Image 1 (cartoon, rainbow over the protein chains, first blue to last red):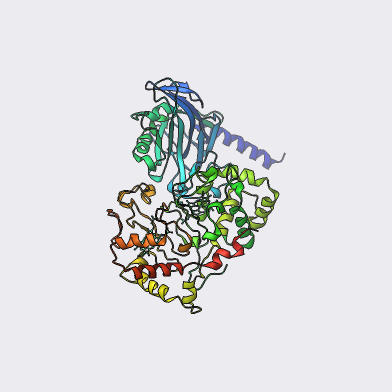
Image 2: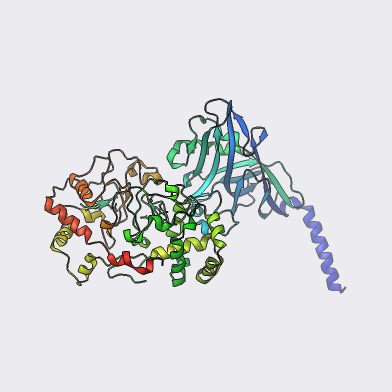
Amino acid sequence: MSIRTISFAVLVTLCIGLFTACKDDDEDLTLSLRFEHKFGAEDAVYGNTYMVNGTAVQFDLGIFYCSVFTPKSSSGDAFTSFTDEFLLVRAEESAAYEVGTFSGGDVRKLGFSIGVDSEINHGDPANWQSPHPLASQSPSMYWGWDNGYIFFKFEGRVDRDNDGVPDAIMLYHIGKDQFFTSTEIDIQENPVDGVLTAVVTVDYAKLFENIDILEDRVSHTGDNLQLAADLVENWPRMFN
Amino acid sequence: MDIPEGFPDMPIPEDNQLTEDRVALGKQLFYDMRLSRQSDVSCASCHLQERAFADQNILSIGTQERVGFRNVPSLANIGYHPYLFREGGGISLETQVLGPLEAEDEMDFNMVEAVERLSQFPDYQEQAQTAYGRPFSAFVLSRALAAFQRTLISGNSAFDQDQRGELALSEAAARGLQLFTSEKTNCQNCHDGFDFSNYAFENNGLYEQYNDTGRSRVTFQDSDIGKFKVPSLRNVALTPPYMHDGSLSDLESVIEHYNTGGKAHVNKSSLIRPLGLSDDEKSDLIEFLKSLSDNCFISNPDFAIE
């Protein structure tokens, strides 16, 4: 080993020491999100039935886009904002999604949006290559006749005649620029080995607050704009 | 591509410039029933060449005989339309494909599944490579269909031949043209230009109460209720019945509709008002509309499949 290499090694060791000393501020941090899908206290599972304000609801599909991930400090200062990352979150998947890496800090809040911004919204899914979340999906997350992404899909059945069997179709397909919605959650988790895995709880029961689920069962957005707006108002409440 | 005299250049996206390979692939897809879940309808099942790429039904009939909610429009000169569908929600021919492909009452399929299915055919893989230099994908499917549709240009009717000084219109049709462009009828205020459409959204007084609210389905504005994209009138004699819902069975009914000034509606264009046309004038107008039929277009082998 030459003198030069040795002094380089010493320098590297010193640097590592320095970085460890002030790791809360400058260390690269990878943000990862794990979604836990719930109906109240129970796990949300396709085909299962849950009681919502005394009415039985069967859960068949929950899928939505998230974007613009913004990790923040306890005082609300943003460390960065991931504006080119998109997640298509499916209730039947529990895997963690990696959002990206930033020079971190003590992340205590996370801002994000439900849906996609208007520029992406008016683009063409065929420009994205599968398995990118913005590429064509099955079931489809894009309206072919009124071009734009469907931000959020909930499908299921509701027990209309109160016989304990959910029978009437529930279908909420929500999109359109005006419903691109941002929200913020608190982060309790601490990073492990440079990865901050934030657990995001999604509670579908909260989607129905102030909604008469016996009557207001279907909205493709435009055909029941009021219902779409009421559902969107509940979106922030669903996340914790 | 032959652009007829008097037609402007067609806007063509950077990533989908026309080549023979792309158009040929698009044509094959346009006629391929495997694009529907049940493999029972193709684009051409509803868009028939002999009907100027429209059909003769009141409302569209899709997979498993499912009845749609609109009359099928002609695709002649569709590459010039600034937006697609009767309420204008389609941003490009490339994205529009998802409409029929995924509509339950049309092809009832899904882009991911369609690509999976068609990718298995070596012919399509090969053509995708030649045309777009990549494997068969949603990109290839949507681009190729769009490329073929951009070649569907119609500009060789009796009217066009008259304009080019090759052949004179019949006297009745010539009188009809006069009327069409006159302030007496105002037809040309909306059905304007080389394609006989200004592509605006207008309410032409079809109903007092619209079941199908048209443009407002995408804008959610009350002021757009009953407004539909002004249709091109090229080949119009070949595409009965008429209007978004196929409710007027023939050209006589259409002229009668305009002559009475239509039904009262807050959004009705002020151009739609009683016209006081004589019987002769009505039949002259119809003769003119018939002169917009392009027999070369509907028999061009380039648009047909062997």
